[in-house]
Length: 339
Ligand code: ASP
Image (tube, rainbow, N blue to C red; front, top):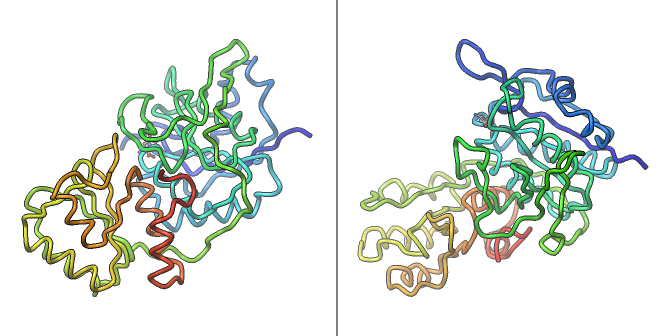
């Protein structure tokens, strides 16, 4: 049977045109991109079930409710198509990829997000190549959410945008690629690294509304005042993502800061740490400045990205789970986001 890929265009640079106020999303991507593909490449294009969001969005305007819409669109068609391609702006693409991973554990179809650094109409745009490699990846057996970009296939919940200007925009600093594409006259061809793929399981769809107020992210800087943090329990915050220094350290010699963390833990706020460094990971610290966090029972996200930590916490905190269920959800590796 011919493969059929469901393509959902949410917006982003690849679908943008120039305007008086800079690039803005514009409709009609599908017709335009097909015209720009070399003839030899067009022969291996699968059947496409295409839809465009109205309005199309710059991904800076994507919110958790949009992740839920996407997850619903995917869940509804999961058993009807070979795979999915989500066209998306690059700015928050890694957040959306992570969110979809947690909202839809147990996928048995590839869900491939892609975008471009240059609009389709710009000469030598990366859009046609990304469109093509994403479609090819969506015809594979990959049972997870991934990002196809710059001839790399990366686990969605391990990826992050590291470069704001180059086509090498995305990296998966702590997990090997799921595939690499090689250029051939017939178009780029994937060489998949199946040993790095997740196992396919039964699809679940965590469809409870996502409530962003339940999670806060705080990036530590030297001298961070702690006053605002004490208000978190009253504001309904269930999880604090603390983006800490290096391999897992925080200002242990600041008694106010430490007292605030103790206060938050007693008030039932889960604290999950993420390293400020994209490479290396949080280990059981060799430093007193790290041990103090362990003593408070704070969970280390180890090699988790900020995007994955935030979306995992948001999906977990938005379910009607008690604190101990939320605790074990946060602690355990769910969909290959850590470990
Ligand atoms: N601002 C754009 C967006 O995220 C950037 C891009 O697509 O590369 O939608």
